[in-house]
Length: 282
Image 1 (cartoon, one colour):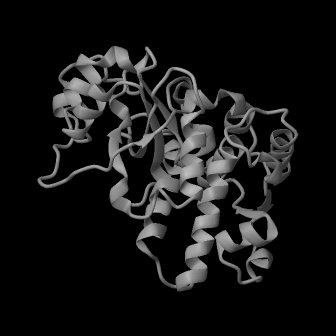
Image 2 (image 1 turned 90 degrees about the horizontal axis):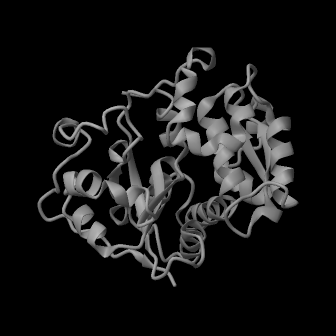
């Protein structure tokens, strides 16, 4: 069933106080203001990113494309959505649309990773044409819509995750989610859109970066570089599910141990399923 986002005026403001949307407080005026922000407002933020006035992850901010209203006239150019971004620096954006607004926020925070995805999509379009889809394109799209980057410093947590031991990962090791042993950056704009309805059970499609030390490069920046080099996202099977609603405090039921046994998002490991090794960071 196709997800329908709630009307802007009907959203409970409390959803913006709980992760993942609470992590986007710097964009509160765009998310919670009484009026929908237009492309002019988005482009003002993009300019702030490009000149270093607004924090972001990655080195591609100075090449930020601009947001343009998706109109019938714009679409007459016949360009593929991704090609238009690469060739004209124009991100077609529907007005008064949660999905496209949240996509814009992802561009503002993670320009390097979005740029890498766009370049890879365009390379696949050039290789096989616009009417076919490769395994790599499926992986890139899945991550763009529902992706998360998980930074890990404790291999024992990865073993629990590999086994789908959700009780162990989220309940017995619940301290790990606040003490820095595991960190999550939500990248997929469809995930953020679903979070507008607090009863939704969120499951992300994860890429994992194993950190060898406390300090070092940001996990998302490392993933962006690996995606750009085509070392990641060549097949959807590289992505592993993570029920984000199980992270302590991310759903109203995480204080109940039974939640980790009963909620349908905590699925057992499929027989024969094995996950790719994480990206190793310095």
